[in-house]
Length: 168
View (cartoon, helix red, strand yellow):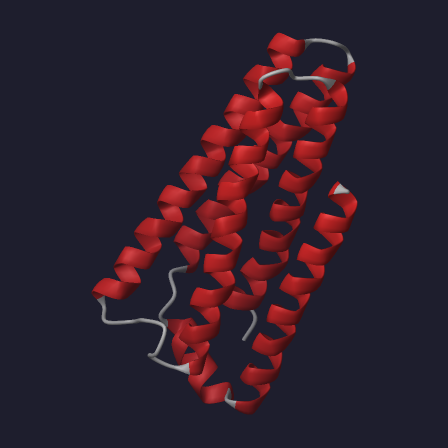
């Protein structure tokens, strides 16, 4: 069932990113202006944090496969902590943007930006919960299932980051 969930989530994010791309083609100046106000350095740092959490999740899977449950739990805790750091950095970025008067209704760019990144942020939170659940037993199948979802969250961000912050 996890693969059905992952596939459906990838389709949802794909549709969101498709809508973003179409809207950018229709309103290139609005999107360029909105994108120019984003802090790509913070987003780049957050990308590094999330990719590192994916590495920790992969290490947890490797440990679970060799029946090293304590090591698997430790790697899962590291992945969850880095996921929490991702959330904290993203919330600080939102606070900075909102402090400048930017919100959902500022422009079509920011409507889609907040919807996309907010939807992703919810998935990071859900991923942390899933990792916490599988961390209790640290059994191979559970860890593999939880980390598969976590890697989907990673993959989505790796695609979103350049589209939202870098591609002009």
